[in-house]
Image (cartoon, rainbow, N blue to C red; front, top):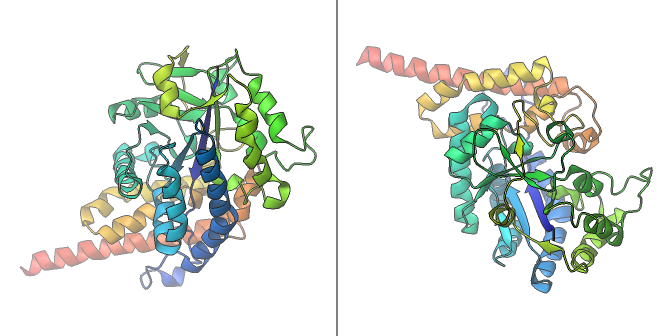
Length: 403
């Protein structure tokens, strides 16, 4: 009797405006409010509102239907500011009692790789935001882009989380199946793995006419899930929420697919929908996974090279985190918030120079003509942050000398 775990990641970044070298020291307005609001408005209307309507109908119609979400804090901030009615539709879903919310970094950042202190701070901030908006406390951790290694498992355990969601990458599983629970080496915390083949059939291949399984119907998909009976305890279908209506447009039939999917899955008497936390509470790990190097759910390599694969990305992010102590020592809340907004992983994704199979999805939202343009605007904004820190230090030094 396999459990079916639907988990959706909901995130949109703050994109930088064309911040030139002539703005440094004169203008601290780094982000393109018009573009950010415009893109989010399109996603709200094409994805969030119609998909939420369908899911709310399912949650009311099927007693056994359950789903889970993680929301980046920066997405929630933008919904609160620009589209509170869309936020209310997510709250309506959660109010059914059949939605689980997972923990993640507030700023959808790569903080764990560079600063565990900053990572923990962001997780705590995110928890407060979720409590405020949804009245719930996340039990499981989902790091940005499912970035994970052994060390993350230890940190999650130390922070009191009951489990971690990770990518079911072939290179960490080898011959084993993602449809079971595992545990990391040296720490007792369950790992719930994404079934990337079944997840990506919806997220990426659904409208691909060259795919041998095209067109994908709810009936056909349910048969694939049914085939796991006896060969796994949990089918974990993890994907971006923008899959519905944005990555896969309404014209592809994605909403009709979603409308019929729960019914087709529940037609099999052994299928049931569960929360991730319920799966790890009901079943024990079947083995250990040793993951010394970072894995993620991005691109075909399923590593962190999409964000850190070239010299531009590495230089930009290293300089960003080099400022951590100075930013926090300033006790300037606005400066801290802006520095953290520069941690949003999308900034580094926009600097990626390699080609990968799902790159077209990210290029769709990329506000820049080239990765180099994204790098220049980011570094200009970062240089302005640096000047602001230096100005504050200089001012304090002058005050001290004059006192």
